[in-house]
Structures are given as structure tokens and as C-alpha cells.
Length: 372
Image (cartoon, rainbow, N blue to C red):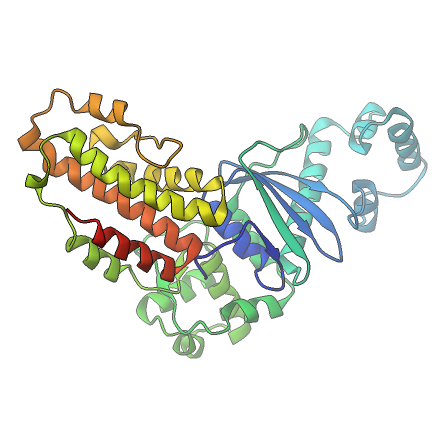
């Protein structure tokens, strides 16, 4: 699945599962507007969850939807509720409860099913456009789903009825690589899905897996796409080339005379990366780089685990330097540099995901030129 990602685009070029995959990976909060010929909806996102759905044109109202599904009988009671909802400008569900035709549990259950059904319906859209508004809690008050994005991706792809999208997304994909130990039990996967994952762990070649799978090719491809969109497999092997470049570039401990000098040196690099990313994708660049730093927090020395970026992209110096004031420089500078280097490459990899390999390689060249 391509690493580069735009905050707006066309569904002819990128499917909704892939959009959700990127939004989950980057922990984007905000609203995803989907406009297709069939319907238009807005999916509200917060903390890697789908908070709720707002419906627009082309989507039937909940009362019409329930009648079409046979879960609500069209009659005098429903018509009365519709009139109450219209005259008092309240939702249909509120009117049903007001008339004591529904209790709150029934209302929440029906409204949840309504939202989820129309979220998954968007997975089959192969024409239209999407746009992401970031950086805010856009969810209106009401019935909130708080459905984890990865869970939504799995369920949505299982329910897809448009195999053309799956074929398009896997076109040109010759190999898939399992991202983690496949022996770990994943409760989110069904047995037949774990079967395909096991085959991919043994043999990354897609065509060979299609031949060896106990499932017919269309089912196997669906599972492959689901694993790819859920970030359980990748189209690329582990970043061996990046690791090699990292090992060859670690700055010598004797290069610096103080923690402050080391931080200034690396901050110049962080700021350069921020300028490159912000030029291409705008204000969200700082949030992306900060999340890249937070994502490796457990691997950083204590003085850097809560490091925050300034507006220009460099680390805020005062909190970091306060954390090392009483530490022996000679004894701890090596660990300090290792942490700064980890942050540097987490940011380089974030640029690669958003802008592609060519930009990543150019940044690595610039970094090499600025070596002391």
C-alpha cells in the first residue's frame, strides 16, 4: 500500500479503506468527508476511532432505512412520530422515545446500526472524492460509536461487495511481508484470515500464496487486501537499507562538548525536515512529526521521552536540558545522542510515508552533507 498520502483526493485513485488506514497510522483527528454519486457522508475521527457519522445527500433517514430493512412497520405510530419530529424539530428517535414507542436502549441500538451500515457502505465507492479536515473534534453531540479504526477496516472489507476495488488495490503487488510475529494470536482475525496470514509469513510471493491457499482466489485476495489495509502486512520488507544508513551515520561521542551543543546540532536537522514536509502538506506537518517522535517514546532515554517540537520543528530545549542538568556528560552523552538519532530517523521515515522514497533519499543526502 503506497506510503504517500494526500488529505484530499479521488476514490478512483485511492479506496476508502486505504484512506482510513493512513488516518489510523497517523492518528489524525478531525472529519473525513466522502462524496460519491450514491451518497455523501462525514466520518468523524478521534483517537484512532470513528466517533460517529453524519449523513448528507443520498442517505435515507433512519426511519426510512428501518422500514426498508423490515425492522420497523410503516403505520400510524411511525407516521405520528414523523409528525412529532417535524413539528418539534427533533430527531425521529427522540420522537419515538417521547411517544414511548422506543426506550433509550432501543434508540441507541438502532442509531448505532444505522451509522455503522452507512460507514461500511462507503467501502464500495469506487468513484467520487474525499477530503480530510484535521486538528479538531468535529463530532456533533449524539450517539457516538467510538469504533476503533482498525476494527472498522477489518469489518468493512469483510462486507465489501465491489471486488473491482480489491483487484485495483492489489494490482502490481507481487509480494506481501508480515509486519510482526505471525505466531501471536490476533483476536481480530478469523481462522480463514489467519490461514492466509500464515501462508504470507511462509511465502511472501502473492501468486504462490494464491495457489497454496485453501480459499478460492477472490476470497484470498480479499483477505490480502484486508491485511494490507489493516497494516498487518506491507508491500515492502523491513527497512534494512535505512537501518544500514543509520548504523553508518552515528555521530561520535567526542564530537560535542555539552548536551546543549548536541541538541542544537540535531535541532538544525529536525528543522530542515520540518521545512521540507510543511512545504508539501502545510500546517499538519508539525503534528505528523510530533506523533513520529511520540511513537518511539518507549525506545528513548528518559530525558527525551516527553520531548515536544517547537513551531519551527526543533525540540524545545529547556525541558530536555533540565532533564540532563545533573547527569554526567561523559557517561551519558552516548545514550543522549542515540536518542536524538532515533528521533531523527523516526522523522525521516514519517517524510517517506507521506512524500515517498525520492524525497526521503534527498533528505538523507542533505543530512550526510551536514555531518560534522
